[in-house]
Image (tube, rainbow over all chains, first blue to last red; front, top):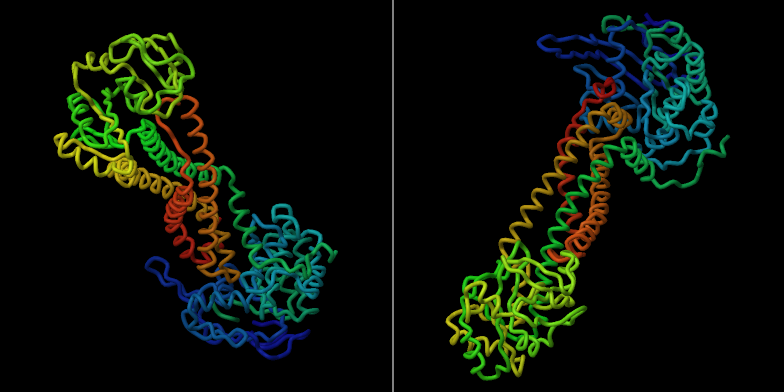
Length: 239
Length: 380
């Protein structure tokens, strides 16, 4: 059941424009594990409006991570339609999905996933490089870094940063190429409560001040409460 | 705060990627150094073998040239690289040669091989001096007694000999009568008659040297001598100089290729192991790069650039190590093999190292490219 809006489809308050940036229809995903077919998603319908901050809530095994992987172009769907910012993922080749990750989707992972050998700054810049953009920060992005509170930590390597700082660097990395949507998979899963609160506030601020569309996967209702809309997933279906 | 961010600094697009590549290499310094060292050994193997081949041939060539002859007569069946032994040519050939038009002088030597690469040469010092101007002595002079011996300075240094020293060679005790500058005819020289008697070949020669009144007629006189001296190998010195090249010595060329092949295999295995381990270790990082939009080409490019850097580092270190091997050879074995620095082989050895290394990186590279992003990201 969707809280705030009905049926898991709709728009939130805040800076949402009402125009859907993600449209999912009849999405299914079947994994083959040995001789057994595992139905991870069983016909998901979902719409997310531009500028929304949506939390997908579900327990372990509910299919939320699979949804994250498909929306991020990390794995192809088995059936159904997924349109992100006008691009249909259903029949995309590997190369097209790579391009989608380069230009349209940004990621924040539970385990931060920063490159350990690069500084925080270079972790962000390498994504700019991969995206084919100049590796210099625009004044607007400098403002975002200030908002994230990491401007004085950019020269440090990940091992010298706290979990909360690493996750904020990961958020900066996720949005540096101005993706249509930022996907966050359990972004507070590895953080203590203080750092979790800081990261969630930052994401909420980012959504409200810049209009960045955010889709957050979480099992934590408290984390989900920072989102403007909550969508529940259970047994591969939106409920 | 903003001042620490290089806003508008115009950083080169490739700088960040180069930083990543460099950081990857320095992240595991021992593995990187061992890889570089192994490639360096590969390059040293190649450059040392090529250097010794060129050095030995060139020194042989220079010694022959320094005799001052225009024509050399070698026994049937001998080659420029094979050790000479025995004395199949009668000394009467010298008289026959002297009867030919334009022949100004003729002398012969007996050569007995010792432990490779040394040999002892018997010569008629009077005739040799007339033809070549003689040895330039650092100490002592030509043999006076039958058991006297002349050695060059490198052989003297290696074997700790000086004038008056005694040395046992071919079961005979010799007395060093002179230490000469190197580079002429042979390192160890004795009287012709003495060596002929010891070898049981009195009146016979191993090699003949012929000097003409007009060096420009060398080819013509060589052809004349071929009809007179029973099909022995008769070369003008210029033709002989041309014969002293690696491309003309099939056995040596083949040996160099065998060593190069072994070197490439060594480089391949080392880089394969290093990069395969690196790919396994960096599974998660490869997943991250792919997740943020890095394609297969980028992942492969990072690995290949790292590999090429290893190969370049190994090549540079290999060149330095080759100078080390050259120094050691000169320092500890000055009287044996001669190693030259063959500069045009530097890029060839580097190219061989890069090819071997890149071949070694192919399988790890394909493994990296084929990694599933979601599995890579969950790799612990």
